[in-house]
Length: 353
Image 1 (spheres, one colour):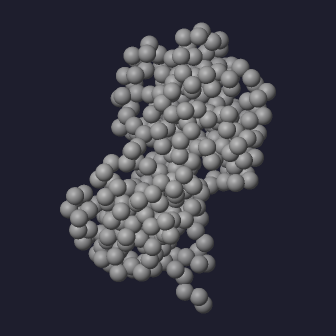
Image 2: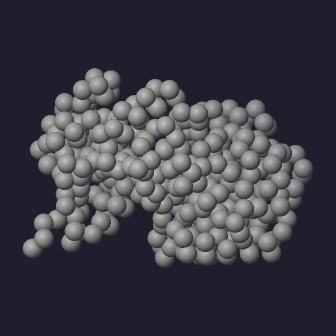
Image 3: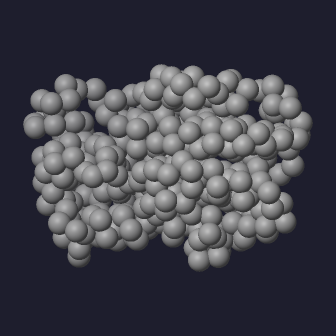
């Protein structure tokens, strides 16, 4: 019998986000005839980790951030006991996990970069990424633009490979809106819904989306669109203040918090939008397009590659609320084009992602 390769997936946590959902799916769906898989979280397990213990060994290792970054002895000791053939780390833990893996004598180290944390990169991040790259055998980028960025002075280009994110297109198939979520959130029948899903983090720039909605509201459109920003994170207070400053109400912008099952939200959505300053390959965007929702997203990172040439007219420049408002208006006013692009979006994900 052929010996299976033991892979240790290393993350900060599986609390929220596309990266976290993908890693949880990797642990659940890996080919167990070829691989044994274990998970190590360097903070806490988090929501997407619920139930993972039933399919794979799960470890957590809390340590002092600065001390363990420079000398991750505790993490290295745990990795040595697990004895993996491969350590596969993900964004946010690259330096610590690569150093600990080499201290533990792991023969192969792989890292997947899911996108930039800051734009432009902080000098400190670039310093540690370069150090980590020297200890890493393969660096995976989830989009071609991200691969080019990584190979531009951060990583030996020979080490960089592109493996694009993907989604289960059967699970994320178009489905009718049953009205339950609309009713529970107090959204009147017939009001169009502009939806987005993600962590409330500065790089997502949801303030741009909120300002774009204020432009549409000033036009007196009827029925007025509702913006739903599903998620949570450190920027929530900033976003709520911006909503109030622009004279928008809870009836205009919904911040429902964590949404565990996004299927009803995607069924409700008229438009799926991203205002991000940077993206790798957005899992939320892939899910929305797979579910047959017309996208309007910023032309950054992997977004243009996801939409492809047939949906390029649905890209908007980053940081331009007026342009985003105009793009939304075009979608809302032309239902035939919206439906056509929703079908194109679905086919695009089926064929490529």
